[in-house]
Length: 82
Image (cartoon, rainbow, N blue to C red; front, side, top):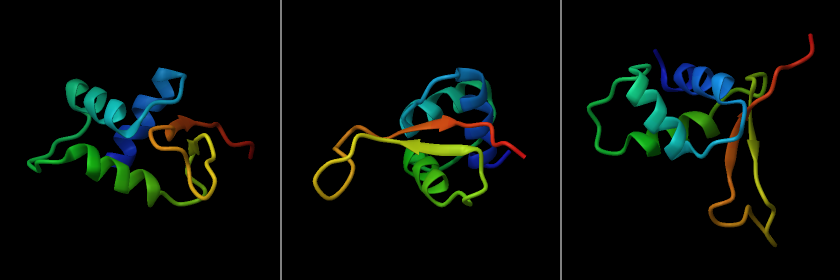
C-alpha cells in the first residue's frame, strides 16, 4: 500500500487529527506500509503535503504570523460531499 493510502486508512479509523509521525508509527505497526528508508515519517509527511486536492485528507494547523506554528500541523480524514 502507498504511504498516502496507509495514511487514509489510519486517519479514517483514528477519527481525530494526527501528526505525520503518529500516522507513520500506526501504519508501520499495522503493516499497512513497508519501508527500508531511514526516515519513514519524512516520507509520510511528503506524501501528505503532496496529496491531490480532491484527497479526503486535510491539513489542520494553528496559523502563525507567516506559516503554521511549529508543531501544530495535524492531518485529518474529512469525508467529502459528492
